[in-house]
Image (tube, rainbow, N blue to C red; front, top):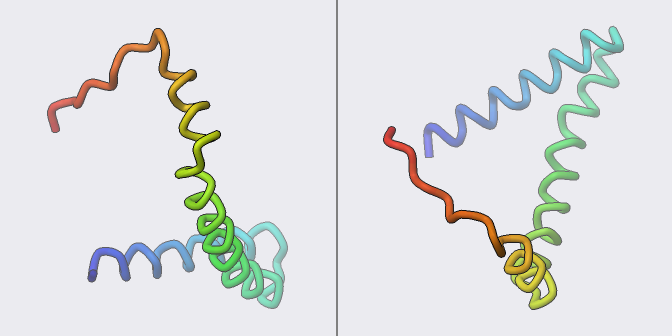
Length: 75
């Protein structure tokens, strides 16, 4: 959980820093910093629902035809 929290803080700092560098506005950078993760969370919910849909499973199965299976790389 600590790693996840650290990544979340890093994400917020990165989003704020980049947006502030591009706009020079603390207000806009602050808004983007909190709206972007909110939008990603909502989009992920719908993405996750569709991922299990039969049509999405069929598309993934067709896409994999003729492609070699992924091979795990030694870490």
